[in-house]
Length: 205
Image 1 (cartoon, one colour):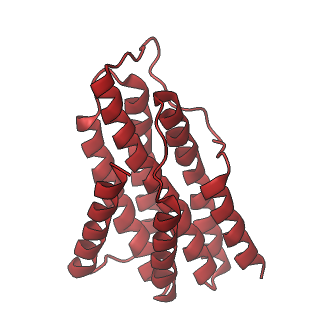
Image 2: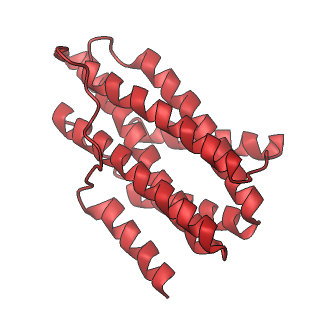
């Protein structure tokens, strides 16, 4: 019952409360951000997608923590979820600073990611951790792509995305060290397809 209540609390806080970061937002010293209207629109769209990714991360880790009967692994997922909260806060704050808004479909993204997390968790600890490894690797590649798409002069957004990229690859490494296994290529392809659908829609809505 405690795990279920914690999962419900995380969902409500992710979707309806202002997140608070445990670490200051990354910045580039002495680098002012001045954007044209077109560049600002591009940054808003990209940072909205990144914010959706962090909403999904909260759902995935919370669901995996709920699904596993292993206390140590539950603590691992809970810690990872807490660490991802700073990314949620950074992207939300950056969106607000740019004059943008989060995706209107965040409840849908959260529900879908939560379902995937439960499914992965029910397939055993090694597979659940393997799902984390592949997810974080794909997110890392996605963030690297965003660094090439963000306006060069949007130093604030670029600093956030660069730090997130570093953190996500560390999460993948931690999951691998905890015993995660490599997923089949067919599963990886399905994950890429689902991510592509989500990012394409979130870029606009």
